[in-house]
Picture 1: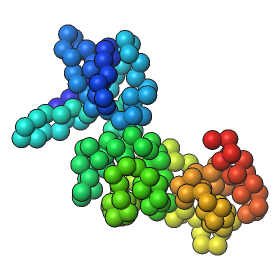
Picture 2 (picture 1 turned 60 degrees about the vertical axis):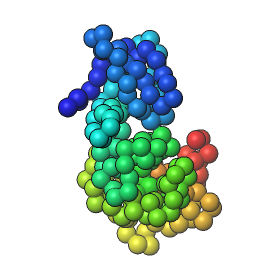
Picture 3 (picture 1 turned 180 degrees about the horizontal axis):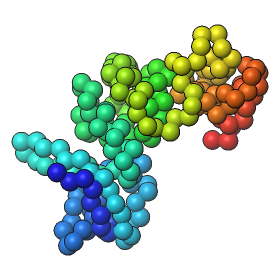
Picture 4 (picture 1 turned 90 degrees about the horizontal axis):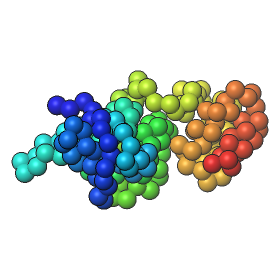
Length: 196
């Protein structure tokens, strides 16, 4: 129904932003990621999704199409409704969600309040095929694409053994995968992880 709403961000109430567009104040429920990027009193363009219930029409807002597209994928998972999807996007960026799915990182999802191990596993299982073709900036490395026993796979395993989550390790290995030895990849990946 609404693709986006463009106007002035006038108020914040809880997790909702009120946008004045043409004299109409739209209440948009947003993630903390989006909320952190919206500046009160300034123009904003939020991409939207409308959720229709028997007793309400709820408008969800997203700072960019990447976050909205991830929201669209999240709500296709059984047991994940709009509020849970928004909670996930409040705890993780869309790119982090994609990386966690591709890296089978149950722990990354379990850090989000309200997401238990079963839902985390379901998210990974149901989203894996939908995200491999998606355009998220998760780097060139996907653990599933690296050959078994390769330097990248061994470096990933080493970083996970050091206590990093699979998604953190995969992102760092992706940035350092141009190196040829396990030691070089791990050294560069650790430098990148220390800078965060």
